[in-house]
Length: 129
Length: 209
Image 1 (tube, one colour):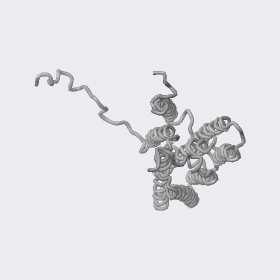
Image 2: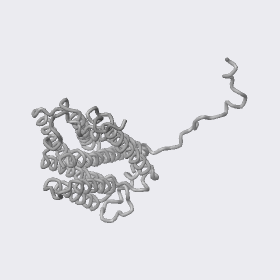
Image 3: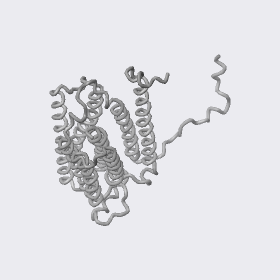
Image 4: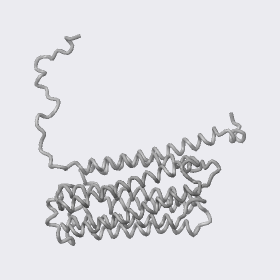
């Protein structure tokens, strides 16, 4: 992407450089920003107004908004695509995402069950052993 | 065992590295390298999120997320960071168009939003500590301060970097080297915003819920 610097000279009329994928135009930033505002406002509004009686529905929508917003940021602000650096940035991102999922779900899962089975006050209720 | 080290005939021609590096454009691999750094940073945050997730219920009889967090405040903070993201984007566009003055102006605005974010966060921290909900109160608060504090430290260093780059651009203009640095800081700044999405969702919103 650094190599783009020297042929940016021809991109002066910013209206028509559809072939420069790495940088993004003013329009792209504004679209990303507006989407982010909506995707931030929805979860805050839902939680602050207690929109749903069942908090699990709210939690689900809030997390969904977060995931969508992360993707929006990746595309419109970080300009992720399948082509930059021969796809290595995307590969690194996918690899990291897999590790993050393993770390988060693994930690929460293991520690939840540790708490459940090994807390002294719980052993009375769960007298299985 | 001296004989085992003896080099067999003909082996001296074996090359374990290229005799001559072929030409690389200066800084052509910087952005990929910086991206890999960001991904490793992402893993640090994943660990901190995981420990927060594990400890979020361990309040040791102290205050929990519902009592402590003030959502309108967090919304304001989120807005600051989101505004700083788009103003940095405008700075990048101005830089690509070769407009030095506009670049510096947008960078300065980005820095001000970043400082607002930090100010609000520090106010929140001091408020919590005054209420007796400091990091030493419970495992929940320790992990909260570690996670949010680490993000705040990143923003702090981002602002230091931003000011440094403003001086660089003012002095040396928008050459290839400075464009590369601006691009790296752009990735860093937007990455911090992505991490903040995780923080306000999982720590604040789901905590208050």
